[in-house]
Image (cartoon, rainbow over the protein chains, first blue to last red):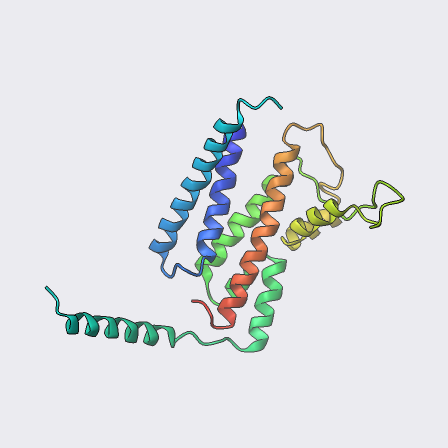
Length: 57
Length: 160
């Protein structure tokens, strides 16, 4: 459930952020940028969860 | 191999093309820009629709309204600035509830319609998806502020 929510959150945020980014002009540029951001959200989320997992709180 | 002069010509041509391409960026008339900004807040994506950006308008509508509805469906709560817990607090309102309210009200009618209809106004913290729901509703409102800003930039001729 938690991972599914994270994927949905990352997809929505990456879609909108890529579309409003002033550095992208064309649809293929926005698509590439959005996919990179989506991957970064997921990658950083998983990395943080892996780092934080052993901390007992 | 290109000589230095060829490279210089390439760069000149590149910048001329860029300037020519940018010159078609003209500001929209003020009433249309203002209307775009207002409807962009009320209905996510509608500002882009007013400016003729149909594809992006649909994308923003689906993403933002979808996130807000998903948040409500996951038992998220609509926040309203609440009074401070302690009567001695130097600010009379609970500041974190103001921030949460600010995040959600960014989604415009997505917030106002359920608030008036009394959907999602009762906190359900015992629901296992309560925090997920709140988070999606915050996301929707905050993203819509960015979308409003984008519509404003397009209207002002600063962006395509």
